[in-house]
Image (cartoon, rainbow, N blue to C red):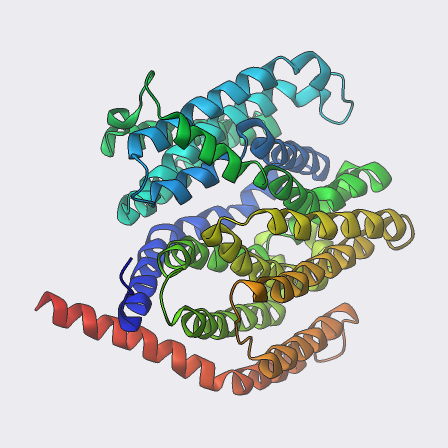
Length: 477
């Protein structure tokens, strides 16, 4: 593969990020601003039960489909493999996995925490599996605009079904889950028609080498993805077990504001995965990776600092009175999301190098740490113990990956700025935890300090965007 010019790599990443942002950021925010609807029509217990169903489904999904959706995007971008073989493998492995999983229905129905929602979990997993494989294949084909538009369609459909099932039909948490299922089915049909995905589906004569390579690549991602889900949701299960569904509902809402950072990160990550794979053989890849991380941490830290400044007024604006105490548990959760974003950045290097075993090991160790801390802290410190355990686990995973990936690629983290940003973020969290007098003023001062620390990074990001726009305009002239 011929080395790609440095400027082209930045231009491609920025261009794809803009497309994903235009296609998904507004729609994601629409769901976010539906929080008043959810918290007004669902009780804290119903919200907690809904959260358990969604998180159990997402945790089981990679096991059911053998994480084949990750293999679809990685091999779909590799010209050494036929796209029809890649897509067909993704679809049939997903269906075969679901068929085996369906045999366990009687056993799943006996698990007390989810026994009343077993059918919902099965519907959720099937729809998410087929929609995920279809969407990842479209992205691997380079149809980023279609992929982004599909994100808008999926979100709008979810909102419309939310209104129908929750407001009109009053189906409660069942209505919420069914709205996600229905939106995923509609999204999948749209992709199959618009991208004519049926052209790539084969029933026979699928290349066995492709099937074997994709499964070998995806297998280590099963425990990695499951352990990542455990790290994400084990605190919810412990909270439900020790404190009840109502407290889990409060805790789940506390996660929502930090989700703004996750939305920003997810938009970037979708574009970054493509660039990390594309630049894996480039001569200046280490400089490219380092520059991007420095810009990335600037954006993530500033987003986190902004959330700390606005967290109380936003919580008051977005949720009903019963959920307002959730703001108290967001400081540690914001920190956890920040380091989760950094950990996901490093996951792209394992993906690009097809070395997924250490991705599994790092997440496994983080999940075990999270479980132990949840077990020890939640009974004595309640929801704050759960939030603290999550933050410590993500910081651990990030540090482990930053050290481990140096054998593959040596990245300059900008360690001084990283530590200073972390210190300021910790101060902001402490101010909120102790609910100090003149809180908004002190949070604003801390945010301004963070802006000064990141001023050079802000200018670098602005310069990259400017250059990308100028290059695109000249190329189109």
